[in-house]
Image: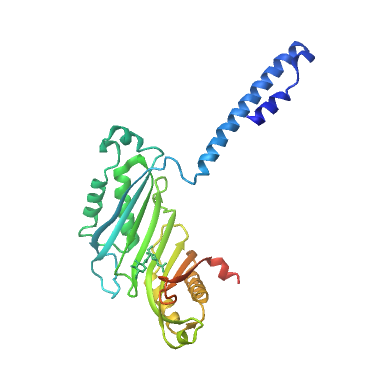
Length: 300
Ligand SMILES: *[C@@H]1O[C@H](CO)[C@@H](O)[C@H](O)[C@H]1NC(C)=O
Ligand SMILES: *[C@@H]1O[C@H](CO)[C@@H](O)[C@H](O)[C@H]1NC(C)=O
């Protein structure tokens, strides 16, 4: 308000200039008022976005559907069904759920019960040549059911029995509706990899191995291609760790990030988090996290 009154006060006085000027200064004032309204509009929008929420972002999701299917070799290199946990997030058109919010009628939304059934049916008795094909099938079913309502579908699949020394192997793929054959992001995480490691600067820590719990997240370049051989990549990293000793967790995570980034040109970046649960007596653990891009290691 302060600014508007200053702007308007600066307008030239029409009586100094005759009728033609009166007309054009009226137009100019109108333009100024319009600009002011536009400014107010954007200022409001900016203050909304400073809330750090994306307004009217509507999602329907299924959290952890427990299934069993053959997605390739399991942790013992056997081709057989293994447990799979599938989560699906339908990112909907802006404000899509307002209709169902008002009507209280599930027909105005996307029926997650039907989606869950459709995915279970598709998976039952099928064999997938890789976890990415299972993700593609679930994504298909989600788009088929949601139709134009979905702008993108995110599918997260956890294979708890895929990596021998880890509790989980999570593949997280988001596919936009306008380019269903080229998933926009593919994130692969090895969760709670538990390894005994010689690590630390205190004399007792040099003598005995202690548990280190690590998460490694690989960010792949976007693209529609088969998954990298993550079990082999992780096995290689584990082998290096087992034959090494570290003074710090910083060195430990940095070495893992380097090896993981260099494992394939398809990997854009890697995040590594590691915790030492035995380090502090009165805290659950201490830990370190780093994220590095492949170029950070290729160019140095
Ligand atoms: C790894 O990720 C899982 C699941 O997100 C989390 O529960 C766990 O605390 C993480 N572990 C570490 C070492 O950060
Ligand atoms: C911390 O450790 C305690 C005792 O072992 C456990 O009950 C608790 O769940 C742990 N907290 C977290 C956040 O892991």
